[in-house]
Length: 210
Image (tube, rainbow, N blue to C red; front, side):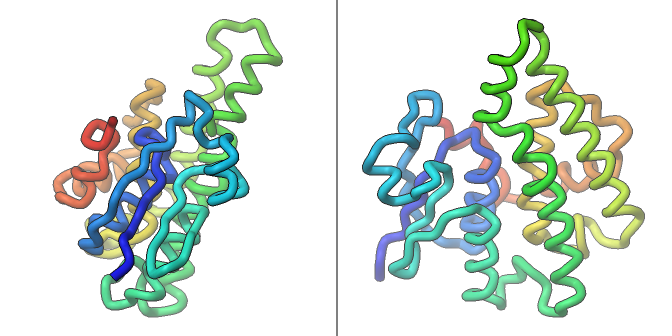
């Protein structure tokens, strides 16, 4: 059996999502740290593996996979019995919508390279913090409304799905940047339930930091 290898940065939201999925599936994997702060993602060797120079990259089933949600959807489709995505097509759309609301709307504008560029455009000392607080809080407010009062312990239903793999790292980032979360009680409750599960615990940045 081919070794599973995750090219990972411990604090990357995208990497965090994939770590949760792998843990939940019980897939053993080797971690290769890619230190973004040291620009390890820009080396020729890493760019040959992942032309975007992003993390994570997952080598599994003899394939090299990139983009966190595409990776998770591959895992869901090749291992459908594990429930990363619901079986019903309409339910899958709902889970994807929740996941994409984080991964495509909040995360990209709060990413390291975006915020680093922001600091070159202004002399305001707190510009980065204001930016993060504004866009994370705005995005979480919309996500809270999307989840609504739906039944179930998690973002969709009574078992964690791809939606929760995106929600939890975003809540981690929100706390890191001092975002006030009291208005997002459903999100906070879901995050708390996820935090009780070993797969989420083992994926936490504090647990995998080199």
